[in-house]
Structures are given as structure tokens and as C-alpha cells.
Length: 66
Image 1 (spheres, rainbow, N blue to C red):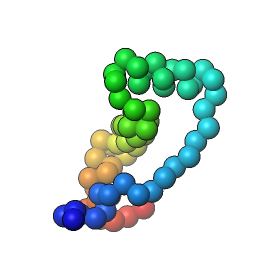
Image 2: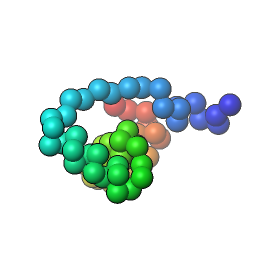
Image 3: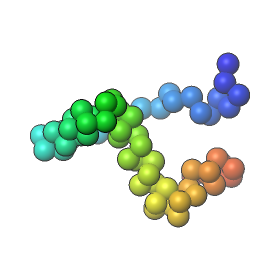
Image 4: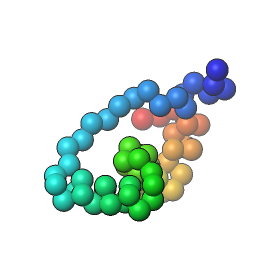
């Protein structure tokens, strides 16, 4: 079905947010019309790429390293 089965999103991560954090996330969702999960995923991936030098995910996909 998928050319690259590694791109299928099947892994879940759970986090707890306080009232201020969820209110902020809800405001972003309301303003953008997007769901909370996709916003959080984008924020996580942007931060990960920033920490790993803006080539983290593409490099990880090539090498398969952790």
C-alpha cells in the first residue's frame, strides 16, 4: 500500500499538559483550523530538526541510527 512502510504513523507518544499549555494549544488549533495532534507533531519535528542541525530526520532515515 505504501512505498515506504516506515512512513506510516503507528507509534504513539503520550504527554500531559497543564491548563495553560492546553489552552495555548487549543488557541493555535482554533486559529489555524488544524487538529491538536498535527500541531504537536509539527512542533516536535521542528524542534528535533533544530536540535539535530536541520537534517536530523533525513539523515536518520538514510542511516537508520538512533
